[in-house]
Image (cartoon, rainbow, N blue to C red; front, side):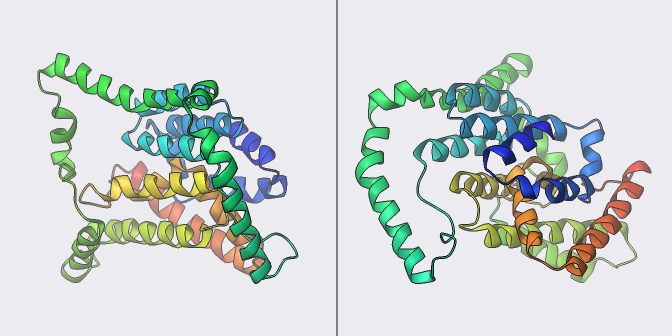
Length: 295
């Protein structure tokens, strides 16, 4: 939370702090932060990567991201965050007080300036080495190193992937195909079965992520948005949405998007959101503490 606070301050969005923190701690699966899972650790490392990237300290950002890579596979998304933060592609909404036409013109001018003046210098070897952004290669190298470790341990580096067969997550699958599988669950599994409601929970989580991705398009930093999108894409390619309600816990830009969405909404809308969130929280933690699979 302290690291998240520092990111918000750096981004000059201090007014969002109370709302964002409340969203984060009442999120339906936030109890996993206090469980014996790696979600809290990954969230810390991912948020530190964001913070150091915003500080333009790409060496520290890459080192922390490589530790995150030892925690969860979706740390690969941090590579995109670091690279896009380095490039600083013009992105975002309208300038306050400007009309749509004026805002579009300003964005076009900014993009042209970035392309003509900044991209050329940032893609030179001199600037790449000066900025130390090339250290981002530590992240995929860490993953390769872990595969080598598994090879030495078990004699088969592919165990990293084949071990996920128990969760039906060992083969890449198109997300639309996964969604079709869930629709079949809703049509064939009786609502009296717990697996039906767990599937509903997982499917609704995916829809919520997509809604926040669409909403936050051009409303948050491009590096944040790319990190958010890739973080959701990676687990959705595994053939199932199992665990998806928990994966949002890893993504600071996801919580930022919710805060920005709720910020302008009337009080009754905010209360409705938190009421639904707390009901789902109670649903999930009641099952989890009784030993049932939730996420």
